[in-house]
Amino acid sequence: MAAPLPSTSSQRVLRGRSLVALAARRLRSSAGGRFGAIAAIPVVLAFAGIAVAIRSVDGSLAPLEGLVPTAATWLAWIVAAPLALSAARDRRLLDRREGLDALAAARGFSASALESARALGAMTAITTALGGPLVVLTLFTAALAGSVRLAFARLALALLAAAFALIVGVTLGGLASICARAGRARGRLLLVALVVGPWMLADLLDHGAWSIPGALAAVLDFALRRGQGLA
Image 1: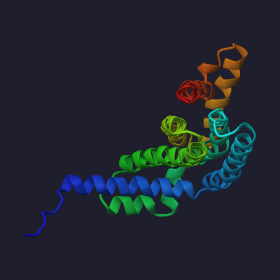
Image 2 (image 1 turned 30 degrees about the horizontal axis):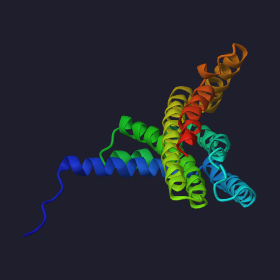
Image 3 (image 1 turned 180 degrees about the vertical axis):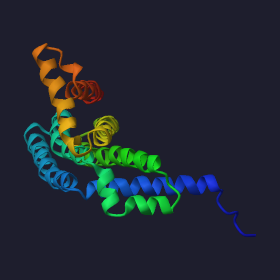
């Protein structure tokens, strides 16, 4: 007996996922995406080398968990930030020039659906670009653990690292998409203004958490630094 054909709604969901994946792939191939992918390698290698050096000096029970939040801060700036700037470009104009909007329309997608796919693609690209190296580094520290309990604690820290990457991806990807839509050619300038301006003002008022970088730093402190207590 032949398998039933997928329903129209299921086909639409699959096509929607494909459109989001295409948007994410296009963003990763942008200048910001390529820079972040390359820059993440020496950062991860450097922190992995520091972890090995600490373990060789302090032994198998050496506390390596503190490396993860520091690495997360570095990766957020050199991986997530360039991707967000690329996502804040007028990608609607780029898609029109390259015929993606015509292709999407031929597949039955509206302009609003394509806009949503760009936003979800930005969130996905930033989350994976940040989360991949960060989780790999955390798993590496788990491999260096001198006990099963410590290894499992660092595996739990890897889950927290993935959660932090998701929060950063949703926040920066969503904001960059809004800036791209509202600012068009000045989308990147608008993104910088919305991030840096409140950050400087919050720092002057000694309320760093009132800005996006400050809020993400607070999330990092809550998730990863508190997660060190598991070990």
